[in-house]
Structures are given as C-alpha cells and as structure tokens.
Amino acid sequence: MKFYDFKLAPNPRRVRMFLAEKGIEVPMEQVNTREGEQFKESFLAINPRATVPVLVLDDGTVLTESMAICRYFEETHPEPPLLFGRSPTEKAVIENWS
Image 1 (cartoon, rainbow, N blue to C red):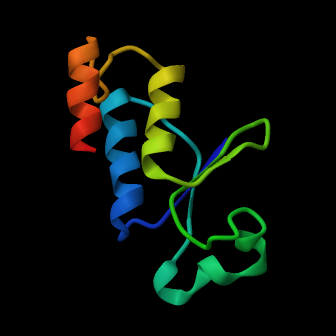
Image 2: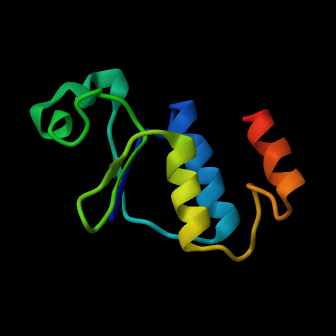
C-alpha cells in the first residue's frame, strides 16, 4: 500500500488528518504538484487524472478521492469510530456535511 500526497494540497491533508486521528501509518510518497510531478508518465500510469491524493492498495486497487480513501481506512480500521459516525443518524448527518 502507498499513499501519494502533496503536503501543501488540501485534499491529501484531509486524509493525513484522518490517518493521524486513527493512528494509522501508511507509506507515503510526495508528488510535488507545484513542479508538475503529477504529469510525469510514472504518476500518470497510477492516476491518469493527475491529481492527489492517491491510495494504491496491495491488490493494485487505486483510490483517487479523499473521502473514498478515508472510508477505506474507516472500514479496515473500525476502532475508534471517529469521523463517519456510529448510529444511522450520526452517519447520515456526517454524510450530509460532506
């Protein structure tokens, strides 16, 4: 598994905050979008949309949206249930905010 990030970008920051709150460590690679690294062939092979964040799972699945990445980690690391709610009402309210 590898998380492609750029520390100055807001969407990857959302994932990093989620990982920190959950206490999850994931190998990360910086993709400097200010210098155009997202347009290199090696990165475009991973994400043709040329955006970060990207999470590549061990089975080769590629997730390119911050909420999808956070949802994956919530499902694979359900404790503590932090940011997606516990009850149906909490879950719906949180989804409404997103």
